[in-house]
Amino acid sequence: MTSIDPFAAGIQAFDRGAWAEARTHFQAAGETPQALEQLGLVAWWLDDAALTFDARERAFRLYRDQDDPLGAARVALWLAWDSLAFRGDTAVASGWLERARRMLAGHEQTAEYGWLLLRDGEFALFRGHDPAAARELGVRAAALGRATSDRGLEFTGLALEGLARVSAGDVAGGMRCLDEASAAATAGEVKELHTVGVVCCWQIFACERVRDYERAAQWCARVQEFSKRWQLRPLSAICRTQYAGVLIWRGSWADAEAELGAASRDFELSRPPLAVQALARLGELRRRQGRVEEAAKLFEQAESQPVARLGQAALALDRGAPDEAAVAAERFLAQVGDGEPTTRAGALELVARARAERADWPAAERARDELRRIADALGTPPLAASAESTAGVLLRHQGHPAAAAARFEQAATLYEESGAPFEAARARLDLVDALVALGGGGGSGQRAAAEREARRAFQTFQGLGAERDANRAKAWLARLSAAPRARGKGELTRRQLEILRFIAQGLSNPEIAARLSLSDHTVKRHVANLLTKLRLTSRAAAAAYAAQQGLL
Image (cartoon, rainbow, N blue to C red; front, side, top):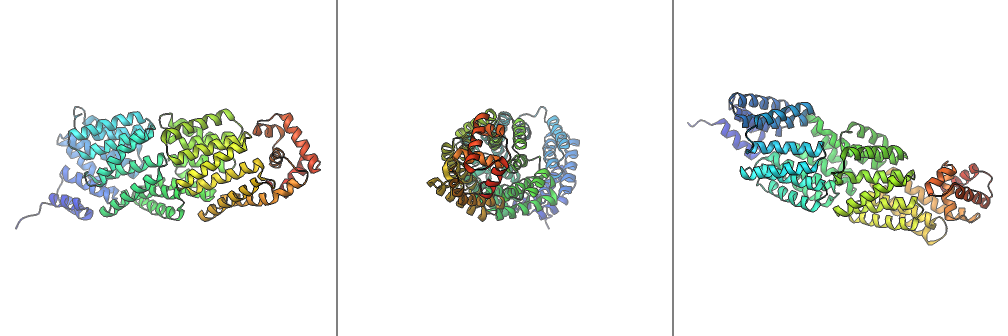
């Protein structure tokens, strides 16, 4: 009777994706570094953290004792990643990375050294915000992959190069690299399943950076199908988190919440440090829903994530704290630096809007201009919409409502074409504000247009479940229906109506002057004239009148 080689049987089970069976065989294969290395990989896919660390640490010691530096380095590189994914131990991860580097001294033409280059490239891009360094390391790793016939290394290096190029603004070149690497990985050219996960996650991440959500959705579906076929729960959880971002953008909020809930449960079971990714995205969903207290708590829990840091700034702006929003967004920009324009875009929009609220025109215009350059360079419709909307905000605050209305209308159209209903509806509310300033508060045709846009926004927000913004749209509709009565008593001009609203908000003449880029004397004259027209004797009476007429 022929005896079964447990190691060979384990490899066969592993190649079929029969993880539990492979674990049994490798555990029976004896105390060899090869068997323990494979056992650690199986345990990784089974989300068994304790077995993963135990098997790999034993394998490392045996490889080292047998004077096999390549084997020891290979396992050390895995332990660096394990320390981050399972425990969030950055110092321990750094220690294992340096152990691998020492083991590979003099072995710079090996595949193992190529994987070290990739780890260095990840750190350069995600922690150092240095896409140029990451691109160089990716190119070198891919070359080593080709030289050593390691396709996993080759295509992971190509994917890193692609992500680095996209991050630096070369979207077309970077996406070509990523598409090729992802196609090769998911079509079976790469035998290491973990490589498939890394390549595809970087692909989707790059799509999100440039807001190419249609491309991201296609790759998410491809990865989900691959994950289900191979029963890859860790990869499925990561993909679900990324896919939720696509669903949030598209307005499928119930589906996004379901995906985030499933991903969070999977992460919490074995990889708690990765759960913050899901929490950050859930915080963004709560912010859009208007559940601000929940959003704030989630962002605080996940503040290490860029999504959460930008979410905190956006939340401050939503709450009417532009100074806080600007400071948070500018701090984010300082951390990112100038080398990653794709990461800067969202923060620049927040800075421009927040600074415009305070009439800080130099800062607002710098942010607007940089955002426009990024949008022009990257060429995706959602970024173009963001640039248009931001330009409209500044024009509105600077007293150019007609030009602002044109920008907001273009932004809404671009957002709709991109399948982004929430952003489109917010642009429409901005358009309402501009139309009112242009003359929509009276009985003119502008009012009809403003009412139409406010109603469209209200219906969208209501359908999404964005209660806070639905109420804002509803308030606009009430204000527009009451506006003719305000014009009937003394026929206020557009500028006087604008100043009346500021008075009702409690702003002083100098503050109103700063908002409208007027002199204090001019504002004082407008205030006197509107009080005379309305036959009112004080600013307090004017504020009360504005409230009664639905002008707030």
